[in-house]
Length: 350
Image (cartoon, rainbow, N blue to C red; front, side):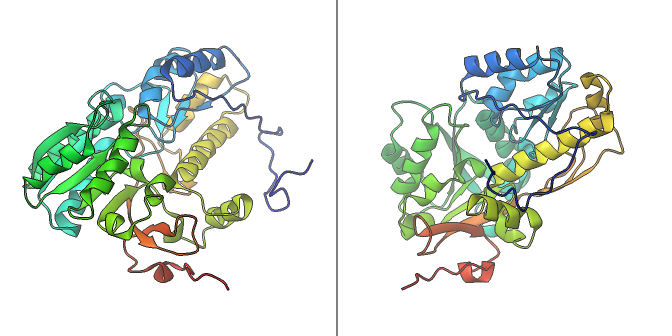
């Protein structure tokens, strides 16, 4: 059987061998994630792990990998808990929450001229609660203030009542930071967008960057929504990765794919430079001052003590109408005024 894309993907050996990949599903459940991690660390032929996407599952498993001296590289775990209590064998591709929250405050203050905000988050989530802490701090430092906060993860959360309370605060922004879909907080965040009815500006981290947001499908509900993301294919449409991924998958890929690809490139280079030495030595390669990968999302180097990426510029996107897309809407970089400026043709063929 010939795999799709086999005719344009370059073949390359890794230390004279092929790269064997094992895919394990943690189902976004803590018990399953721990079971997977405990299974993987026992296999000596596994040299490294592209770890869980969410902060929740990463926090549940990071110590299992660390104690067994198996490098884990997370594409998406942003919680600063992993900076405050670093693990020697953990690295991450994504920007941490203190950088993400600062970028969000800049959007509020400089893009939409708002200095007051209400945040919707999950206080039990390592990602969401940590984000809220840093957001409040950064907003205060820059002369703004957090008016109120709502637990968006509660099963009985009522979006209509919440928006009525927000309205009492006058001109203020809504900040949506649902968790990594371990509760109903993402679905509740979409309800907030609908109930807001396009009145207050809404800003969100990349947790809202989803086709389900576009599925709302009403321009008046989406025109005041801005989202910070890790990468967008239209910011560099001629990039080889963007073109190859589009050809392989039949359409553009998200920032999750780009970050996961970069995590794989980091591990591959670490394995390659490590040669035949024990897998625990890969940690020294990745933490080394000369280690560097030119990733899809930019240059990747790590802080040797924490495993945090040294720098990772975030991008800002908005929603615009594009009639030949699946939901008739699409995310494009905020710097473009219309989809055609970003290189999209939104006309419907007759």
